[in-house]
Image 1 (cartoon, rainbow, N blue to C red):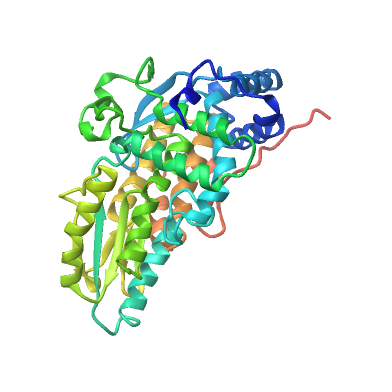
Image 2 (cartoon, rainbow, N blue to C red; image 1 turned 90 degrees about the vertical axis):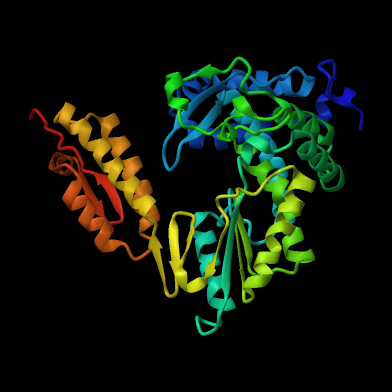
Length: 408
């Protein structure tokens, strides 16, 4: 396929373009996650006209990604986020809706990120099962190797990604809009969100962020923005050849990966040592990625292994100290609201629910009932209990119903 396919002058027969129905489906999928943002609300004021215009722009080749908003988050760790314009997010959902069924057939069972039913908890449970099976229910020796890729998203090579994606789509995608799908994928992948982006927050927010974790310092033609749906799914696709190599070529039975964090369990410690340079060479030669030299973990399973916010030990999974610390910090953040104004408004209350329920949702999967109860009773400001209560034991915060006073 020639690069002229992706020129701005390309025109597409509407019969082989995207259907308006697919655009609306992508919009409703996107809206369910981002409905309260300023971008989403502005788009929603006249969403039908906006979607029809987007449909026309996509089909006639005039669509170009808009500006992103760049900002820093600090939980669970400091990260640089690029939030795409809501219009672009609709396009991301459109593309992933079309490609995800094919990706799911391509991905191995044990890649865990951004897949229905295969999130964090599934990954943790699979890693726990690997150890249990490899050690014959904790009666035999086995070892755990955990590795991490340095600056993963910032070093994904766009040329390699698109070349592999193009071959995959040409071989697997059977719809009439194949060329248009490829064109939009090219525009998304090769878009440079750092150009003309809107910086949210102060420059000092970037202090302490390593250069290899910022798109502003990525090598030329490298880097996908954290925060986009396409980035998460394309990153998984980028690593899928590596996953198949681990499973098929090396014959690893107990292997799993969550984004750039992967785990291998094996009876032979020396074999795991041998794998480290083998894996390093593959990543460097095929994907232009590097193992993080300070995040190579190799231990007997009884020592426990930190994985996805937990510590996995025989017959028990603990919440990692960092998760506990973040939970405590979140409680203190909401306590400051009470210190400023004794009566939190509805926005404050919803923020508390969103934050606290996120942590409780993680922690309730493990034996943390006493920990959750103790931390909330000890640290959450008592004024909050005038507005919320706990449901399902200590599993979820719910707003108390307001008493409506009638005049009669």
